[in-house]
Amino acid sequence: MLNRIKPKLSFWQIFNMNVGFLGIQYSFGLQQSAINPIFLFLGAKEEILPILNIAGPVTGLVIQPLIGAISDKTWSPRWGRRKPFFLIGALMGSLCLFAFPLSPALWFAVGLLWILDVGNNMAMEPYRAFVGDKLPDEQLSMGYQMQSLFVGAGILLANASLFLFQDWFGGGQDIEGTIPKWLYYSFFIGSFLSIATISWSVLKTPEIPPTDAELEEINKHKSLPFAERFKMPFVEISHAVKEMPRFMWRLSAVYLFQWYALFVYWQFITPLFRVTMGYDTSEAAAQAAKMSTTYNVVTAVVALILVPLTLRFGGKKIYALSLFGTAIALIAIPHISDPVYVLFPMVLFGIGWAAMMGIPYSMVSKIVPQERRGVYMGILNMMIVIPMGIQTLTFGPIFKNLLGGNSVNAMLFAGAFFVIAGLLATRLNMPKDTNNPEIDL
Image 1 (cartoon, rainbow, N blue to C red):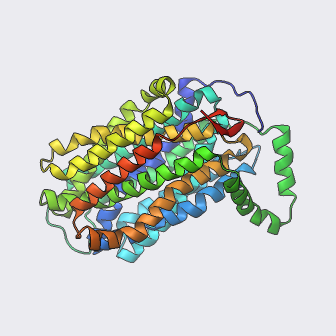
Image 2 (image 1 turned 30 degrees about the vertical axis):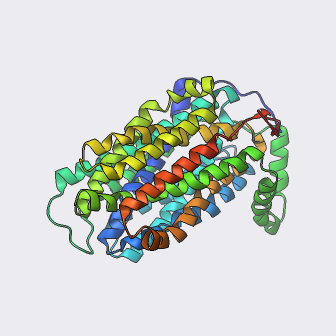
Image 3 (image 1 turned 90 degrees about the vertical axis):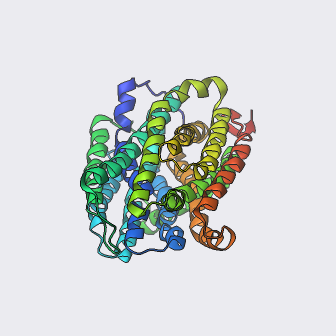
């Protein structure tokens, strides 16, 4: 493992380097709360929502590790290592967000989702590695929890915009095949934030130049024939998976249940409120946006509070407890029919979301080699999208045939999966020696 002494950064330096996550997560917030309602507005049936969302898992599975491996072998004195990928991804996301509410038909919206997910994945994966590149080990928890703060803030803004714009500019009955005008404004704001916030971080945060040994390796890679360079990222991903620390294999088991359950929640929270509260699609989407706003307020507030708690009690304990809390929230939601009281479980969900978006990344970043951080962060995100892919392919039949086509049962199913994830998280022992990650604490 290549080691280097990295200077400590101030609070505001860490803040500035993570501002770009605001735009990425605003886009993700719209995907959580607005994309599936748009599909419903354009005539999609509830049972096909999972398969319509398969773009996220497929693009994440391919793009994130691939971009991670390529960025590990990239360096430009002018543009840096990770920044070119931020900018290209942000530009793609910005254009797609602008076009999304203008979708004339379901097939067009589904196609835009594919392109949007490619852009978001291209921006997000090297951002995770970027934090690890810049920060010494003792500041990794702060760096990734700062990302978690912006996760909460970005999704909060996205969802707050949805129900505020509906309140200000909505009204009237849903018209099948038509996207309400109040949805347009949230997407246009997201289009601006996607490129503006990434540009802020790019301009404010210089990358650390590679060491002589890293530069020699990069130049050696550049000198290879094109065919060799083309297949090299795939070879690198294959080798990294074979050599992956035991800790990451255990984390993959947690992620299988955690992310399967999260995708169920995001897809079926709007249909749930059509059942439990008798809302139409617009009203249910607005209530779902309020739920997301609530838990992301909590995430933004508690994200940095988790840093000292993690240092004192250990990432494993805080992470496992957060998953159990999220399970309680999901099991409670279907039993509450009041639109105000149903927001209270989102406090537990928000704490869980803050932990999920920060703690695993800081733990993994400490045990993987610096020169392969990009590819390992890509593999970590493969562990997210594979469960999502499994969910999109399997949950439609499960929902229809085993859960009776009832969104209440879907939410209880997700809660049970979070219980399993919490139990598996209790097995996440950090290695005693980060240079030998097979020796557990």
